[in-house]
Amino acid sequence: MSLRLYMDVHVRKPVTTGLRLRGVEVLTAQEDGAERLDDPELLDRALALGRVLFTQDDDLLAEAAARQRKGLAFAGVVYAHQQHITVGQTIEDLELLAKVCEPKELANRVVFLPLR
Image 1 (cartoon, helix red, strand yellow):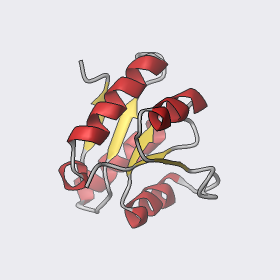
Image 2 (cartoon, rainbow, N blue to C red):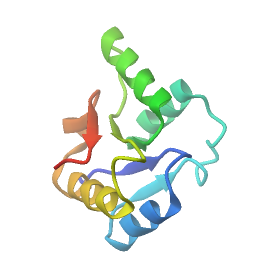
Image 3 (cartoon, helix red, strand yellow):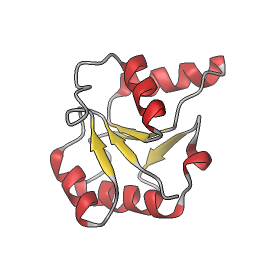
Image 4 (cartoon, rainbow, N blue to C red):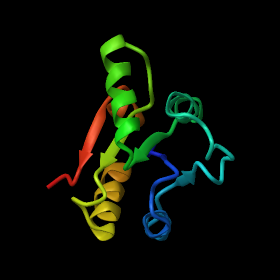
């Protein structure tokens, strides 16, 4: 089973579009009606859907770290700071993760982009 991604509301639309053009299964928080959820609820929603959450929000990164410390489950978080990675790099790195990783490999983990 390939990795399915859940995009936080802060992710730029070209990233989502580029991933879809490359065959990556992506669902945005907006499409899911979850754009107003707090960070803990958003992580819970991604877990319920079996999707790894991609975010560029530092607060969500902090929530994932808190869950790791407490031993609370989440489907996984991929994080990229908006100023440290281009849209193209983001698409390439997320495509790579989606096509080579299994969901269980990222469960309860935080991955930082860029991968290089």
